[in-house]
Image (cartoon, helix red, strand yellow):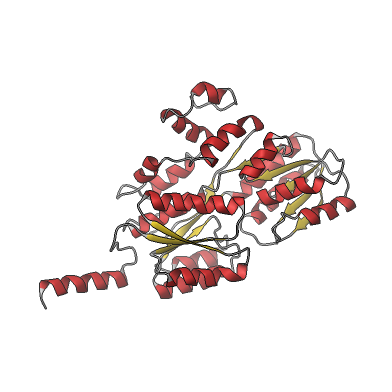
Amino acid sequence: MNLRKTALLVVLILSLIVPQTVLAAGHKIGYNYFGNAGVLITLANNSKYVVEAFGGTTVAVDNNFSVDKIVTDLENLIAAGVDGLLVWAPTPTLYPVISQMCLEARVPFVLNDKVPADPALQEMLRQNPYFVGGVAPINADYGKAIAEYVVAQGSKTCIVNTSQPGDPSDEPRLLAFTEIFEANGGKILDIVRSSGTDGGKSQVENALIAHPNPDFIYGVGPSFGIGAVQALERYNYDTIVVTSGLEEAVLNLLADGEIAMANGDNWICGSLSALMLQAFLDGNPLKDENGRAPIIDNVGFYPVTSEQVDLYKRFFIQEQPFSVEEILAMSGSDFDLAAFTKIIEEFTLENRMAAKVSEGKVTVEELEAVGINVK
């Protein structure tokens, strides 16, 4: 066997036994998004931004708000020849199916924005050598922050507007909110659950007939906050709306005073998951202290006030919170899990605005005028 044939054989063997081996620059990455909604598009665009910053290309598929389509759509992405997958899956029962599919196809995948809480599911995923990891917000703390806000306002009664039971994002928020709110004398009059695209508007309207003029409505995600505002348009109540999620429509309602409080992280997990996949495909997989693929569920968040909306839109909606130069620095042999974790720990509104000051895009005085201190 001549030297050329030997080299080709080595490359072929490595491609079969070492999933993270890089055989080409510029990766082709597939991702699914659940439907054409602001929050989901933002998450997807954050991933796309990172992939393209590294010179890669993306292939996207819209699930059209159908959980049943997710597996088929991911199969189609694999058939399209992607090098890796960014997976958004709202139902934990999908994880074993997706994992087996990617194992058989030898396609690396990362869980994007939602990760399983069940240790058995986590272990199952980590047994797959093509499982890159997963990254999600610290959802319980979202609910705690909302509860602490309404308790401080003296609120005692509410309607909750949320998704169907078991959602990996919404359910931890609701449980944490309930614990604190009820411990402080609060009463949840009704929990409205829906899976439609109208944010539960019609269901909340019905709940308001049975429970008129509650102190507030908690929209557990941004679409549910918007749905609550729309439902209240039929009534002359002084009910306030609070929500988690900072999509542009929520920011507009916050600025107009129709939402009293909102918090979120601009769906930065879309960027973080893409960084995890990029590291894996570049032959530098992120591993925890036990050599396992990391499953991270503590990405933080921050509130945005009505006075801060314009600046937030400018630097988180109209452009990305991280510059291309910053993204490209998040790579290489020195970019390990500790470095990745540090990015998560330092992802605050103040930190990102300080970076914009350094880039000459905003002044310290402009930030201080709306209550953001970056000194």
